[in-house]
Length: 162
Image (cartoon, rainbow, N blue to C red):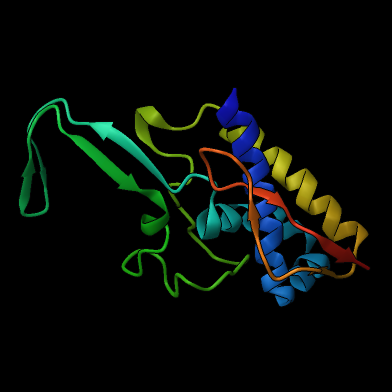
């Protein structure tokens, strides 16, 4: 329950922050609201609410040139994988038209987030609604206040909307 609630708040807040930092993408979404699905996927890839996850190997596992012994904790840095230049062209660019955006923000395989579809829908409604209603958004403070969370969730994001 915590993940499904707080992480969605983080997705929406971090996404709105990305749009504040990239107002041309806000304008593009205003002009092309059909891009809302891709926009949310880019928000997840660019600055998702879960930066890392820990797994434990069940058996000796090869990873590149290394062998990770069985029963070893492995820290998977999802945010780094989502910015991998070998996988994502120009990975530090926030681009809501990005094609083939197969990020790891919701994990993968048997660990894929059960609430992914709901989180996507909530973010599409929230961000899409803001874009429909307001021509412009801008931060009223340069500082960021992070929430008291296990995840990357803003505590507040003061905005001016027009």
